[in-house]
Length: 237
Image (tube, rainbow, N blue to C red):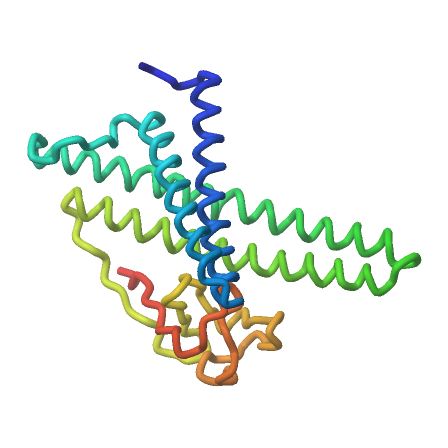
C-alpha cells in the first residue's frame, strides 16, 4: 500500500516522532531518578522507554516497508546491500537536514529571540532579561555546535554508503598545528575548534585544545576533557 502523501503517512510519522521522543525522555528520567537513589522508579522509566521503542519501530516499519527484514537468509547479497544503502540514504537525509536547515534556523531564531526578548523586558525586569539573554545566547552556541556534529554524522554515513558501493575510503589525518587542530568528543561527537574556542566556558578563540584547563568539559554532553581525541579530516588531494 502506498501511503505517500496521505494523512495516514503524516500521522504515522508524527506517531513515530512522539514515541521516539518519549523513549529519550524516559531514559533521561531514568538517569535522573537513578542518581536520586530511586532504583525502582528508574527501572520503571527504562522499561517504559523500551516499550516506546517498540511502538516507534512498529510505526517506522509501516512508513518504510522496504526496510523490513523477515528472513535474512532469503535475501541475495545485492538485496542486503540495497536495504543497507537505503538505511544510509535516510540517515544522510536526516543529518543533512539538521546541519543545513534545522540547526542553522534554530540558531538564527535564538539570536532573534535573544535580542527582542532582552530589549522588551529590560526596563521592567532587568535581571530576568539578562537571564533570558544568557539562555538564548547559550542556545545559539549549542545549535552552532550541533550543526557541526550533524555534518560529521552525515559525512560518516556518506562514507559508509560509498564503501558499500566499492568506493575506497578517503585518506584522513588530524591537523598538525595545535592552533588549528580540532578535537572530537568520543561521547557525543562535539568538535572543538581552537579557532572558535568555547566562549560560554570562558575559552577564548585561538585557544589550542592542549591549553584548555583540565577541568573543562564538553559543552554538549558534559564529558571530561580526556574524552576528546584529535579529529581526523579528509586530506586534500
